[in-house]
Image (cartoon, rainbow, N blue to C red; front, side, top):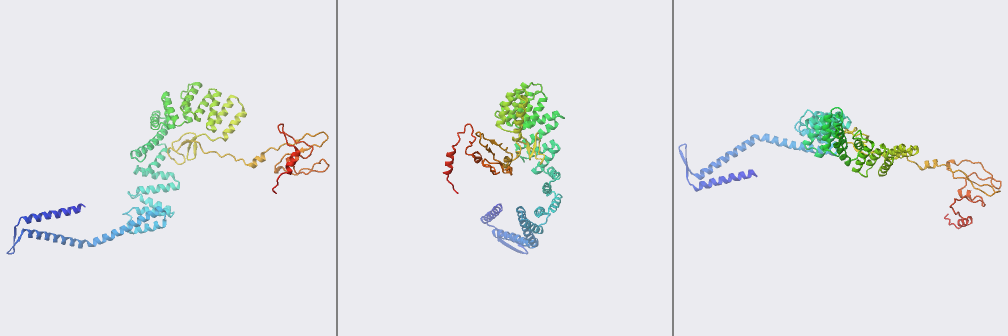
Length: 529
């Protein structure tokens, strides 16, 4: 567009010049070789313009002829490069789609059309094709060759990192991630892996520096960065609590300031304040964390904030903690434990029962067993509560990647992931499935019942129902007429009504059935078969 405007401006100026000359007539006389040439000024201007245009055209034609071999070669080179980039693009798409054959074919085609030193993506396509073909050794060699090229170094480190992760070599993976983080701290995968490695080694300051770099480069959200920083500061304060109290105090208070509802941060900050006899401020921190998520460690530290308190004072602090989080099983269990320590068994039993009713779990029944043993010493009831505890769901704990821990940790021991532990109930334990056959086998056989008969009559013995496993060969017994009876057990009705004169045994509130009426009902019964 600018070029067109420039051409229009030149034409416009030429037109103005010719119009100006036309309004001012004159002659131009040129003497050359003894001859004098006279022309008008307009004709001279047109002639000069034509000569300049002819010279420029002649120069352009000469230059075009002189540079034509180079132009032709450049045309074919550009065409060859375009074909190479087209093959490279198709190969990258095939590699992403998982077509190893097409990726390898296009990689060879691109390597013929484009030099690898001009386009580093050819190395990447070759490595991807090797991975798709399952040749991981060739892919690793190609990634290692990329380390020599400053432009491809980060790409090679990324490929080696993924290969180490695939092989399960965490040390090698973190080594490559550390090198990548040193070259480019803004890389998320490198910073995450390096941060996990520093956290496992206890290098809290190094991990905090990486978090600050991520926050400064805006790679992560502000809240996420603050949460990670709070976790690392909490772990740092816990590790320095006994060795460097001042550094632990600074880290703990900053961690609690960044994340007031985080229980472990509030606990370590409260411990620091309690050591400085600032019970009021430490209690406020625990109360704020308790409102967000009631944890047993918070309750334990809050109730025993002052070591010299009497048991009734501890019970009062437990009740205050309960008022902050009402209708919560953890609050009821806290009061129940404090009441058990104060020997207020009625309150302890009431609160523990309420906790078991709100959330039946192992800890509530174990506490009821302790209360029962302390109050009555009834071992039968104690065993009853213990049996309920065995079958009850487990208490909440710190869980990360299937690992259950009683104490919080800053990273997962399985994957090394930061801030992986969550306070929740672990996986339920599978109980023994009681089959119907087991119930039948464990059923106690009913003892024989002898019905009272009038004097002089034979005594009819009523045999109980027995399981098929107990049905064995029985000796024949003499009947009333001197014969022998079958050893097979008779049905209950036949055993009871074996003798027409025998009265069946009835419960005190059973009016019974008239035998004659029962026989009539049997005769009138409709039979399908």
